[in-house]
Length: 260
Image (cartoon, rainbow, N blue to C red):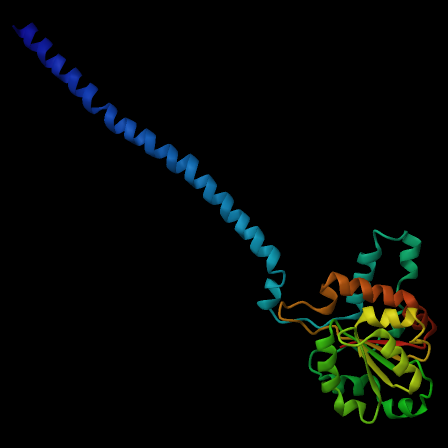
């Protein structure tokens, strides 16, 4: 009987283990893989993708959290070298270097346009009076858009005085109209985009030889915090314009460059 009782108890114990033990084991095995291997890796990849996308869109996150730095002549030189490095031979790259002597003092972000122009060109009144050549200007200010050009023209009233100013951009103005204006009267100041200025030079409507000052609207940023030279299309047109006569004038010493 003891043996029978022992067998009976052993049998009950076996049944209980078979009925109860597998249940929690199965539930744990079925839950854990779902959490560890299906959900978590997918979330990690999505998060990483979102992070990458976010970084691509907000290219000036660092700028938004720090003080902006004014542009320098070295910035322009480096951009030119980077742009042409894959397009030109080493010897040709050396020829594209702008002489240090052609650069005027850059804006330290404390100036208005009028105060900056007065600082780099204190003898403007005399230069303006001595300028008598048509199809040319004494000073060119290059910016990234028509709306910015209009803004710059409004902000330079204190400097320009009685100077004749011409708008050199494509919006609402045909290139032939600008050619005729430059042919009919003496103009002292031109404000516009590099693309339209290039086109005027190609068509013979604008002669760069009498040009004394070329100012880049370097530090201003649009709503996306982009500077003029951060936009690939504008940057390309600026460098092409530099090669169309600006570089040779700088090397001859007759043209000075400023970064506003």
